[in-house]
Image (cartoon, rainbow, N blue to C red):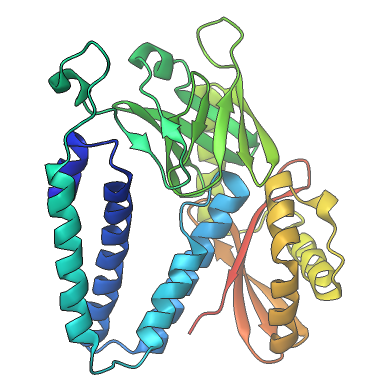
Length: 342
């Protein structure tokens, strides 16, 4: 809270932004330490973090953004596995002292006064300030934000609802994740912790007719749909949840996806653009992991989850996986992820 108060008065202080980011990471690492100190097995807890990380990163990578840093997750796992050393307590105290010194110095800095203005006016905070990648968010009028509020379809079975929350937008995906969108300009938005964003179209009608999600140099078009279309989707999803039957063709599509990844030649044309780029970038890792797990022995349907994803149990020679897949009406894979249950 103290760091945020200091930032409110000194939003131009870049070292203070860096300290806040490091503080937030330290809180996560401290949380890990408390969990492990409570008697939880390190391997079990680490696998749980990886499972959640894979779920979110693939969901969001396939749909809009990647707010979770894989490098930070890896750092947390390394810290948990690292053996304690004798000088850690002394080092912690020393670093805490250095941080307090930086905070004290930062608190004494005078805000730069603009030419012809009193210093008090120059100290007015610019909200919300730069994100981790140096992009600066601007504050848009509520009327402008309301222009983008509504439901957009990625396919006939994958939707995103844009809501206004104060001075920013929130993208709420039918498959689960919620992503905060910050304005970079009147119609360009970005996420806090990733290179993803969203661009809204403007035809002068007062409501954006369409949008495009951007990530990894790719765009995924979205079209605005009315409430009746979304209501129909929810009714169909409810029926699928009650019947617990897979969408037509998802098992065959999943088998082709695995065969393509195992051979190093996945059919990217069978995937929507963002997912195709994610698979392309991580293909060597996917291939190496699958080689360790061995050939596929069987694939069995296990149910439908609350977001409409079809869940399959995949038995490989050396492990059993739990895979989730969602396919649009165009036959292209809109999202996919897999985990290794205990």
